[in-house]
Length: 144
Image (tube, rainbow, N blue to C red; front, side, top):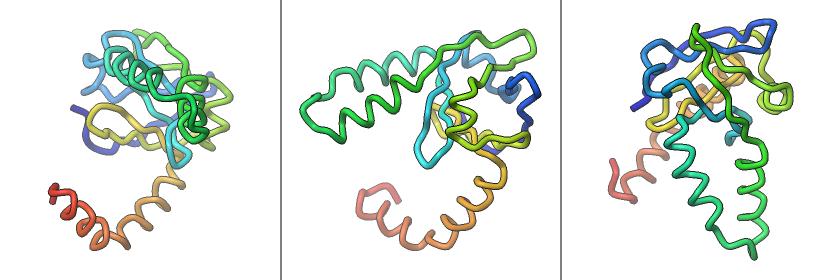
């Protein structure tokens, strides 16, 4: 399970280090794709295979479904994790997420999210303003 926030840097060769505590969960390979809210998602291969199977079986007749599947699958790249625990972030994904040098890697249960550090701070600030509303919605779902 991935949890927590970690500050990292994208190096000049567009490589990003996976936090040490998560590296074994990836088994040397990862999938990086466009995420929601202009971040990137990084999945272990097993989790990605399960998710992509679900996405591939969604009905193609709905335009919103097609768009989401395209976003996730066409935007994905499988990558090896090097000896130093780094993944390569392709230019198109770096541009999509607006990543500069300083990023935050957020652990979110079955995936990692990669955010530009400034965008992450802004996102958290806005989300923290709405904690009461979020808690209420989670309560309606029986979660909180």
